[in-house]
Image (cartoon, rainbow over all chains, first blue to last red; front, side, top):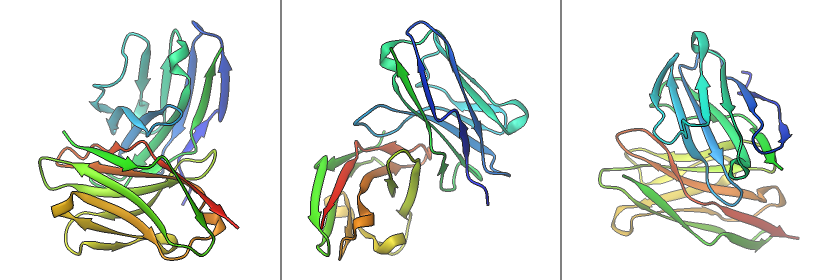
Length: 113
Length: 112
């Protein structure tokens, strides 16, 4: 089966600019996750979707981050405006449901200048 | 809330030697425990998981882990390291909310 697809793989922007990441989960997976992985740390959950509804966004900095999952399939994560501390790898994961193991994409590495 | 602590941010082993990565967890309810591996510029891949039942869990690539409730540990081992085992390894825990909490990771290097 095809894995979780993410794009772009790398992005370099200046602080205060905006950026968007795209994720296509494994077909049939109802649950989708976005994680932030800062260098030297484990992934931190930003937001979790069940189909097209938000289950948990308690750790999403809502003043600058937003995410949507239209039609319960693809998802986009946006940062506007970006700060230096947003430099990280953004990982998307999906699972059949929230009780099943998560499958991760290769991530988008974001560098803020 | 649950959390994990991975002891040692870097581990260096010789090819053919034992690999031992340490993970201790904190959870107020019976935990589910996971080990993931991350190769450079890739996402995380599930190595193995413990939910209930047998406390010795076997995973992919010859890895295994043992759940020890009395020690709140879930250490990962592999009897004989291979060059391809060089990667970063993450321990993770979840409980009844099914949200994963990851440790900070342990980077494994394998010496020829």
